[in-house]
Length: 289
Image (tube, rainbow, N blue to C red; front, top):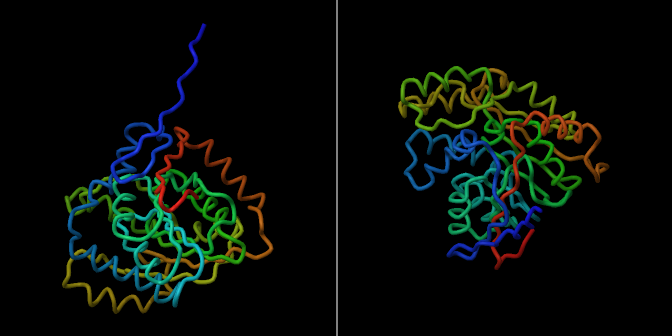
């Protein structure tokens, strides 16, 4: 007779956060998904600082200009730059990342709630957030369309999604950078064509309001920063850019995810090698979401 399984114990770390369940990714996939976490406390190289500042200005200076009211989800918060800026602009911010060290870092540096979770399986109710931001995240998902469908689900009707991701046109360059040792991180890379991404978003139910291309040549060397900034004036030629940024809106008539969104979710879950189980990381002082 099989012995009953003991309930999972809730473990608390020294900062008062709580782990509820663990991930069930394969070991290789988990290492690649957590690749950026190993860089959490390292100084940023000059080209990364330049590019991060550019994306911050693009998100909060153009796509989401002015104060941000209501709740905001930073889906894939990384090293906290976007979360801190969103909180500074008045948003009630929740930071999500699959890396526990990254979430711990952002909650130490910012007045926000932190949750360790997979962006493709967000642990929030539908229609929760007024704004969702996600910068350079979905290309690290095995099924990016599922991540977009989840962002659609948790966005309130009339809410906005600001998203950026690399252009698959330039994917060979990332492999060349890894081969030459210029890029130190070997993460899960699943880049997307711009028109494919826009098609997914429209099919899922978003209304695409703006598409901006930026970084039209590699920006590894500081000597090229001025030229890179000058070429960003060609933003309408986004199919040729290294990165694209999109502002989309969830129509007010959609209180529930559309049927096609559910179809994307089912297809993505079937294609995943291992189903990912949410790992939740709560700050008891801020309350659970």
